[in-house]
Image (cartoon, rainbow, N blue to C red; front, side):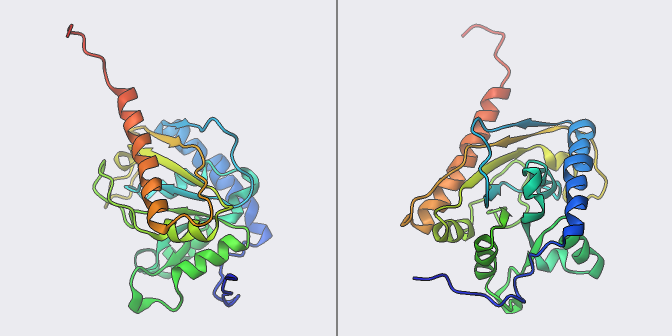
Amino acid sequence: MPARKIDAALFNAHVPSGRRWLLWFLYKVLWRTVFGLVIGLRYVWAKAPHPDGPVIYIANHNSHLDAMSLMTIVPSHRIHLTHSVAAQDFFGRSGFRSWSMKNLVNAVLISRTKEERNVDPIELLDAMLRQGHSLILFPEGTRGVPGVMADFKRGVGHLASRHPDIPVIPVYLDGLYRNLPKGRTMIVPFGGTLVMGEALNFPAGTTVDAITEKAQEAIESMAQALLDENKIPSSHPE
């Protein structure tokens, strides 16, 4: 069954060439310096080379710093083609906030409620992937309780099932919520860890539920591995 087309006017993912250098500077210079030297974020890279071409990044979500941290791991030539998916009802409240998200974060804003939608978010994101763009998804749907991962929503399953040729890269974020807690606007340097997992590939025919479940299991296993790594050995004999 051919992919359904979407009106070009609804596909608001074109990045003017003049903004490419700005995005590169923001994420490969400015934010990378902030995360690395100011916050003290530790990067743990995947062993395999980063896939070339469109990618679906998925990560747990506890802080407004999450999207920026993920943009710093995107290859330089793909930054202008990579978009975090954010909530229209939160980031679209004011003209300035909406402009900042679209132009400085390179985000695409979608509505979380059916009543406010003028287009199906899955159709819009599907169109972006078909045009060669990458997406950053937070499958929990919202910033949750710090340190607690909520059940993933099925959006990643719907998109990955439509694009078996596009890899899904799981990323586990630990501790960024301490640097910019929910409700705060000032960054404080408390460190943290970003773990980039190996790319997941789902063959054609894999169900939406199976993809969603495996995606969550991948991030949960990364979280557990990091927890085990950080455990302090007991100084007392068993």
